Length: 209
Image (cartoon, rainbow, N blue to C red; front, side):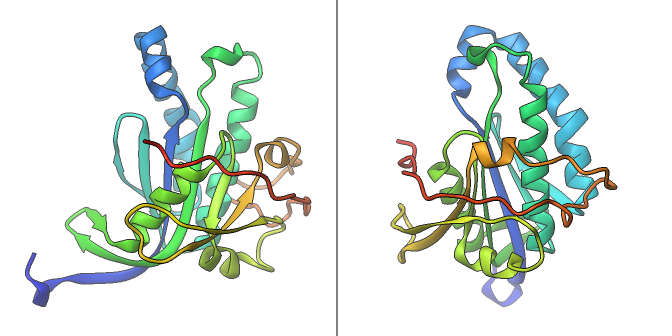
């Protein structure tokens, strides 16, 4: 890429992956793929569209999504995680598809339909820090949603991650907090009427090997 033609923009980036994907595929490859396709068709893609996001790419067990607004990105992530609670309600624990989601807002480099840069890398690192079912966001993202969404993300402190020169301030919404969120009768994509919830800092997972 010629440096004189590099295109940049500020964006909110959502990175998600499936917990224990290799185990699920090893147990039931056909069933896992069918379930993932159904989750995407019936929940994930509709929520991304409702929150004005763009699916950049999928990588088997993962996805990268771009939003113009971090409020939309966080609203989408919480809606997906809340929706998965309902979809997993009657599924055995060993067979459940559970996501981790990380969100960052920052400068990205545009290359055709793909995106690169620290803004993307940090979102991916936040996702690997997440516990199953949780949403983790950067300090920059948390500052932008403050007062705009009725969600209380716990301050999980500064985290040092691979290939990022500086520590990242991490804020998290636990799986339990997401599970007990009310489901208001609102149009798709509207998260502003969610009631505040209290979150307590918990130990984060380490990054994947």
